Amino acid sequence: MKKIVLVFGLISGVISSVLMSISMSSLNHDCDSTSGMVIGFASMILAFSLIFVAVKVYRDKHNGGIVSFKNAFLMGLYISLITSTMYVASWAVVYNYSMPDFMDKYSAAMIRKLETSGEKPAEIKEEIAKIEKGREDYKNPVYFTLITYTEILPVGIIISLICAGILKRKKPENAAPAGI
Image (cartoon, rainbow, N blue to C red; front, top):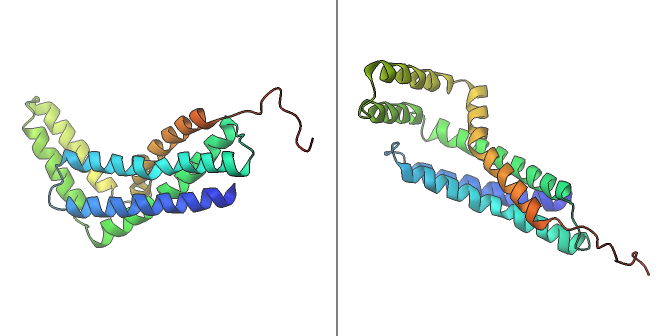
C-alpha cells in the first residue's frame, strides 16, 4: 500500500504543480479572472482523480478485491497530503521567483471589484482593511503555507471520502477462507 500511495501521490503532485504553474503564469496579468479559479479547481480534481485509481488498483490487484472504507480513505488522505505538499512547494517557487507581486495585483483587483459593488462606504472601508491585512499576512511564510494548503487539501479530503465510499468492499459473508 505504501508504494502505491507514494507513486500515485507523486504523480498527482506533479500534475497539480504543473497545471497550477501553467494556469498562474497565464493569469499573471489578470488577477481578477474567475476562469483562473475554475481552471485551478478543475486541475486539482484532475490530479486527485488518481486517488480513485490508486485505491482501485490496491483493492483489485493487491488486496484480493477487498478494501475497507478506513483504508481507502487513509490511502486517499496520504495521497492528498503528498499532492498538497508538492503544490504548496511549487506555489512557493512560482510566487517567490516568478510572481512576487501577485498579492499586490490580486489585492488591487479585489479592491476594484469591491469599490464597484455598490456596497455602503463603511462596509467597503472595512473590507479593504481586511484585504490589506491579508496581503500583509501573506508575507509570513507560516501564513503563506497554511493558506496555500487550505486551497488544495480540502479538495483532496472530499475526493478521498467520495472514493472510499464508492470503492469500499468487504469480504463476502459466504466466501470460503483463503487456501481452501
